[in-house]
Length: 639
Ligand code: F6R
Image (cartoon, rainbow, N blue to C red; front, side, top):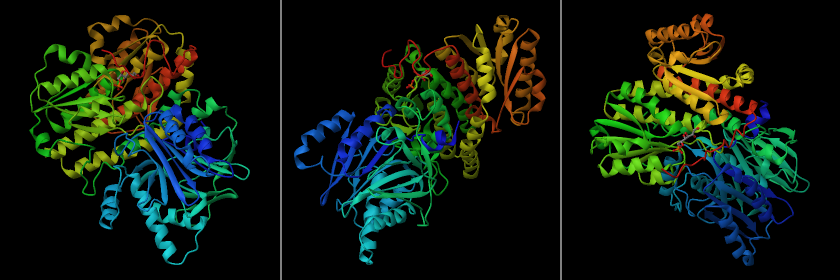
């Protein structure tokens, strides 16, 4: 995996394109947006500098809706300007509506901004801007940046600075210095017609170098048909593009340089960021997806902040039982949540397959909290279970990756995972972000109910915050797992065992292998082996064993080690996933995969990842379509 692959092209949630040159910009930017369509999105918009106005058009839904609106407006000249920015949105703050689609304009309509990422301090900024008279026209965090940039530009002009591209760059630098979080921003100002300014912090932005024209985009596929010469920006940089050139600085205004590179991928490889499959790209995006899901969740007082919680603290204090409903991979995240919620919150928590839930007459009432977990927000089984829960007067809280989808719409509260669009059918980054969301909800409940102190919550959150870096380290060392995958491609069955939170990880590893490699795979609670499944073990049967941390409950870890010995004694080929430093397991492992140390309950954030790679690589070695396995659909809207 090269640096270019990881840093230049890993997308966040939204697609971004900017153009400045001597050709009509609308069609170039629209083409770019079309090339970013593969990411999935819920709305799109464009801003063009045309004479002395910024013309904008934005629409919820497909790009075709935007194109139609633009065709209808062709007469007002929107197609003639040579400077434009365009955006496809994957909603985070504010639902997917026309009004929340980007670009967002400043109050005077002179500045237009598009944004990818999450501005963590937006609530504070918005309050400050509103107190100063700004009128907001959307529910987005992005609109703060438009008002801030316009105010900075005004202040610079009033202090006598000459208008021109440099002013726009300085305005952007002053703006981004006020922002916290992760963002890529692009902006245009009608008084600086031949320039687009961009800024980047923890979110991708690449520059396309043309002749007499230049491009900005969240990934190279947006401009690959115009130029193959690109510049990757570093962290915390501002870039100014004009027809004549590209200027890069840091947020303080010191000159900086990006990294030039030549794009030799074809369009389809570019979409996948240079990876062979979307699934591999999405596995690699997991550190960022987790970081994004954690962004903005801790208030200045150290409390956990959830989105759209239409439940009062008293409602949450009154909860006497939690039910988690979900399907497939999302169900496995719920199984992990059960361990965390019962341990932290000390109330009973049941996990149910959504498809079974309503048929067994579960006992629910107003003091039951039902947590519905769904990446797509459209899974019919989960939706029907949710409706059943609501009929019984239970409160429903959704964990969802798709803003504005049906499940969060019908719930009393929602916590969005900010994983960005997941294209591969097999769920990877959605799973890890669902786990993070479950942990946050568990901590929130524990805090509100007074069973954990604020400093205890903060200590778990700070461990969560180190997970992205630990995951990056883990992902950088997966060569042995790939080699093992090639070796296992002819196995007729693969078994997975684990205990405690390692049990759902075993189930998830087996599910991934079934759905991608079409192999017989089964996950078991390791203690159940002796009650039947151990009879499946034959000479050479691969058994993946998820070992709990010895630092958690020693007895638990020792029991798994005994289980490994039992299967090995019966001829199994053991693939052991254990924590770094747990050298004592090495003698029982035919293959040892070490993962970074984490607190016991957070371990699935690490131990799942080698299993995702294993399944993906075995499927590829068997010649299957990894991103679109047979018989499966990404969103299952039938019961
Ligand atoms: C497996 C997988 C499925 C989904 C399940 C629920 O890799 O992707 O098992 O997890 O269909 O889908 P959502 O989360 O959209 O409700």
